[in-house]
Image (cartoon, rainbow, N blue to C red; front, side):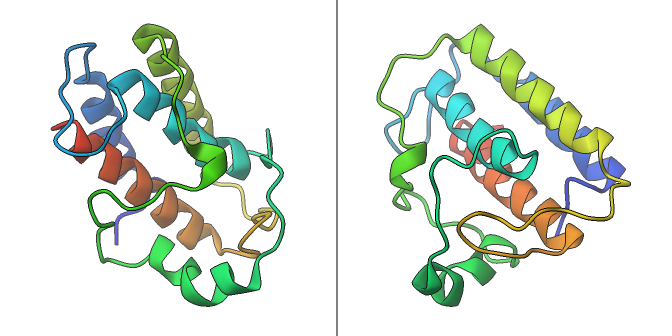
Length: 147
């Protein structure tokens, strides 16, 4: 499983993000490319301890969903989105791309960090699991827009 803590995977992902444009067309789902980039900021904000989105521990999520976040099985197309990460507002492509790129770069800059706080909803993840989870989510949405 790829991890955004791996320099090669980070670079590849960064290049894919750079290929997105206002005209990138979704292959599935309802979000625009600007909404998708805003949506993808959420997991980085949680990990980088910028926002917890009001999440609370959820035993069912831990038991049935947590391992799905960092295993090799790709997310299904049209998988339901957590309520706090749903996007319905129009989003400015350039602003959201800049914010997501900044978060991705900040995440990568902390790859040597050893200790991470527990996820507010799913609990403890290892550093490797955090990197895999962030890659898997972002990869899913980059594929959604053909990059």
